[in-house]
Amino acid sequence: MLPAPPEFRPDDTIRSWGRIVRSRHRLARPVFRDQLSSLATNLRAEDPGLAVGLLRSYGDSNLNPDGRLIAMGGLDRILEFNRETGLFRAEAGLSLSQCLRVLVPAGWFLPTTPGSRFVTLGGAVANDVHGKNHHSAGSFGNSVIRIALRRTDGALMELKPDNPLFTATIGGLGLTGIIEWVEFQAKPITSSSLDAQDLPFSNVSDYFELAADHHARFEHTMAWIDCLSSGTSLGRGIFSGANWSKQGPLSVHDEAPRYAMPIEAPAGVLNPLTVRAYNQLRYSLKSTNRRPYQAHYGSFLYPLDGIAHWNRLYGRAGFFQYQCVIPAPSAKPATIDLLKRIVRSGEASFLAVLKDFGPIAPRGLLSFPTEGTTLALDFPNRGERTLRLLADLDAIVLSAGGRLYPAKDGRISAEMFQAGFPNWSRFKDLVDPGLSSALWRRVSVSSLPESTP
Ligand SMILES: Cc1cc2nc3c(=O)[nH]c(=O)nc-3n(C[C@H](O)[C@H](O)[C@H](O)COP(=O)(O)OP(=O)(O)OC[C@H]3O[C@@H](n4cnc5c(N)ncnc54)[C@H](O)[C@@H]3O)c2cc1C
Image (cartoon, rainbow, N blue to C red; front, top):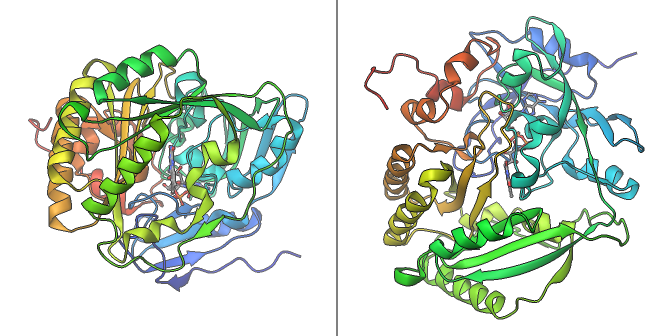
């Protein structure tokens, strides 16, 4: 006999990864798919809900303050895995980390992966996540074959790519229904290690040359940049590229993190002096050694997962992550403008990443990736000062025809969102009326003046 359906219980501890907003929710934790029907049909427009995964989104796309959340982490069963073909089907609460424990020993890997493996399949679909191999593999939705979606009217739909609700659900921010399971095509590997190389570049213009020259050579690429350097060194950094090793053991990552941030860091630990010292050290160490090396996928693809609760480093006030993409034609001048503004603020942190997205078109109506360059950085939350800086960055992104990544956002305006995602009005007709989020309530205001860009 099934246990009673879980109830929505008050919970005021919910925060997203940036830790800025802590708000009261009512939370239900189902453990069987059969329980989703009664939970879903309980949701309605006047008191909507939202399914969430491991809350690894940074801002407010995974929050529904004063409303209801369905935490999907208990739905983590593998339903089908064909070791010959790499077809993989699992409940939406299964984490990528758990997927890898099964895939890797059998010689398969995720088709693409974000920089954290503590992300659920449902979250990977709902944000159509991208990884270091975007230029060669596209985003997660490009490898999804089927999705089971539960609507709040009780309907359970099996969606394939030719269904408009499929294209709305890929990158659909959890607003089209509750994803019950996901089927995707895994990628074959012959080793769990990658052959990698780090190449320094002395400014952001050199990054663009280096990236263009090396995309065909490497399946995985990304660059770390020092966003406190200026003048002729503006945006200097280290470009990393890697390919799967041709042979080697198929060993799974260590689940336990090597280090942990036990408590929130005191305010001011991350200041321009400490970040400058860190950047200088990192640049000097990496730029003297260009020799190829071998790295396990755990350290190459998921470096931050080695430090549990690293987000506490930013102290009690939390932090903003800012991630934009600028379409290829204007990517270089706009990235230079963004970096100049960031350098002038002295606000940037040690985590700043540049990456080029390739030409494979995403499938989702609201998918973030588009061919061009993406810049992602963390900023400690210093209130008005930080918000003013981010608004200036928004203006540069907007005039370059770019957009911001909703998975990282907790503050963009409806104007910015709607300009970046022109398909949003088609998308809104497919939103399930019983679902909502803090982000969606902010950005879906539909009566903007005609002149809005
Ligand atoms: C260290 C770190 C590195 C990251 N690197 C990258 C990166 O390289 N590339 C990238 O694209 N992203 C990256 N991210 C962001 C992360 O991949 C996404 O935010 C991801 O969606 C989080 O998944 P989650 O399971 O935690 O979902 P949550 O954050 O809990 O939710 C995310 C969205 O998914 C929806 N959702 C979750 N489960 C379901 C479900 N079953 N049904 C319907 N909707 C659902 C939610 O409603 C919400 O809209 C990174 C995050 C961190 C912390």
